[in-house]
Length: 336
Image 1: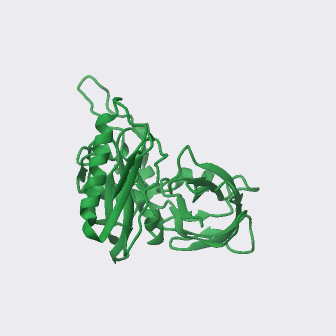
Image 2: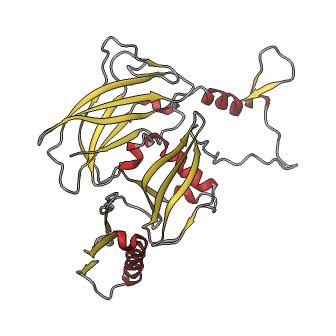
Image 3: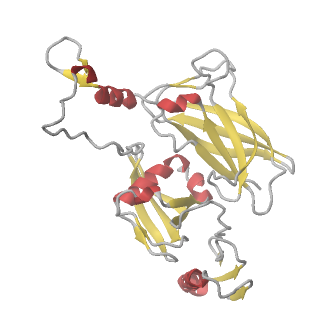
């Protein structure tokens, strides 16, 4: 094992540095005689960057450029154990690389925790299930102290987009308040006393919403300047998504934006490198539930460096205002 440090001082970050040193030592103890680990401190927000050298696999944790609020989980080495139409069971490694202990058993905490995924998530074709994984960890009340790691963690999550909790509490009427007016509800068809509230109407409309995600993303060809990427977009919702839009012109056509980043998640630090607005090409642009659309995109990748080689594609459309899940519209692949 080789260990080297630079830029160490007696600053207020000393406790955090010691925590990360203990993490690296712990990782080395897990590897035992089957591998070695080397790490260094460069004064960066993610000072401990372990590099594993094993006979079976190589895992490199690069510097995290994603801004966070002290809570961060890094998920690696995904492996699908079992898969059905309704749920998927996976195994992965989870590291708490943030400065705060993570306890997803506390309601609402999952919205404060930054979760980063490595390329194995996309290699296993799970890129569209990041929010499902987040909510599954919250449902299991996952806990992990800062600087700690858990290996071979098994997690089962639903393939259905997670339901978002309503932020508005139900109204409470006291004796001094007037009851709701009849105009606040919509009369049900057929007359009678039964009514359908605006809330019920919105929920029924939501049930038929589309939900598109990158089902597959791969590089067809690449040189020093250009990369040709093939992507497959699948509609896993219950409504229809219109690839070419519903209006005249290109205003609400589906667009694909491309970025280069140091991590396979879209963040403020990602650099835009182009994209495309999908045009009609003779194929049907109506994506019914379960249907897919495959396209190609040629991109200038000269901004790629040794540390910036994650190519991220993001789906954009005005139709997302009616989409079931707006959080699964990105995919990533690592450039050579």
